[in-house]
Amino acid sequence: MTQRIEAAWLADPRLRSILKALGTDGEEARVVGGAVRNHLLGRPITDVDIATTAEPQAVIARAQAAGFKAVPTGIAHGTVTVVADERPFEVTTLRRDHETDGRHAKVIFGRDWKADAERRDFTVNALYCDAEGEILDLVGGLADIETRTLRFIGDAAARIEEDYLRILRFYRFFAWYGDGRPDAEGLRATVRLKDGLSRLSAERVWAELRKLLAAPDPSRALLWMRQSGVLTQVLPESEKWGIDAIHPLARAEAELGWPADPLLRLMAIVPPDGARMGALAKRLRFSNVDRDRLTAWALSEAPNAETTDAALRRLLYYGDRQALIDRLRLALAAERGRGTVEGSAASARLFTLLAHAERFEKPELPVSGEDLVRAGLQPGPDFGAALRRLETAYVDSGFALDRDALLEKL
Image (cartoon, rainbow, N blue to C red; front, side, top):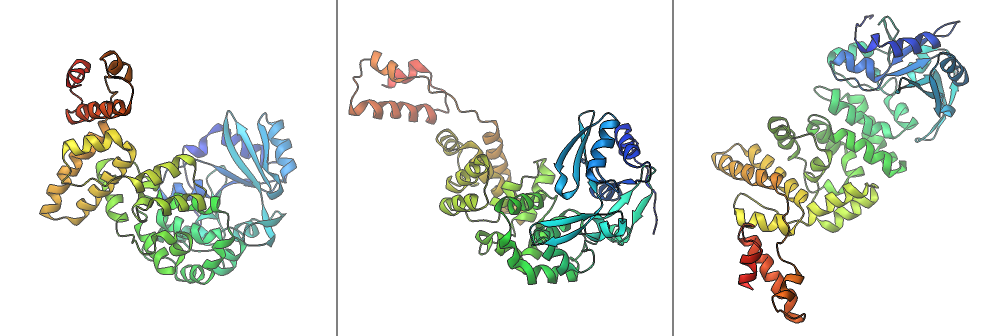
């Protein structure tokens, strides 16, 4: 099955110059992987990767001779980043795996395009195209693109045992590109080998989960992960909580213009327990920002359709604004998913509360401790209590009382 593509990204003079520099004097160079796959699926293209028969040192020499910067970012595995006018292109020499331990591989460079294709993970990721757009398909990737089938190359178990992260990649790519049911052989292999996920670093696991949760609607992939036991293996906190909230949340994001938010989607499938979320963030090596957001959500009070404007003001003033926005978005998505008349009324109220929360900017209390001293109040046990009473009055007024009105209350 042969096919030719025409695309603006393929006509980029920087890319064409690199392909020309690497593909002369007996060597060959082709675009590989995601750019070809996404073009055929009509998806956005961000990175363009290149495969070549030229060995890494030759890649560096040829790139520099053509006036480009060459950075040996992964030279032991044959990867050099070539930078043309500030745009990076990852260039990797054709290779095959010599030894693997389920996490890392020792490679042998070669010139065989089929051997290079067969060492990759999925058929849709092993498509090459030359500078003229001619696609080289050595593993049946074009047919799988047509049917949106995500299939391991060759024996699924063998591919997974080369790198257990491919279990999560199987579900992640299914979430983004798959249709119908996952490939049966691949599914069985993930069930049988899921214990191998324990060999992976926390950073790799969370990076892959985050990409999966960023898919337009990851609910089908999460359902299969749940049934296979893979989800419990990497996210045991979700085991008794359920994943039913994911599809309504993804739909609400699409319909209401919210960005696809992996962390919010994680919140939808784990319990709002501060201690457990702190442990989860530590185990998966979250960034401080993500850890703080997750634990603040877990510890925050949950507003609902019965929450009054005054109660919401208090929650926003004394609490964590982002945590309340997260709580309200999850509640709104859940109500919209119920599709009942009562749910419609609750949705309208939650939408109003969410709009207030998103616009809220915490005001500064107009009075200070110095104002209280000037008003004649002496420092002591009642001093802090008096200031807190004024703060409560200020919040209850809807932040309408000014300095003079508050001091009159004093």
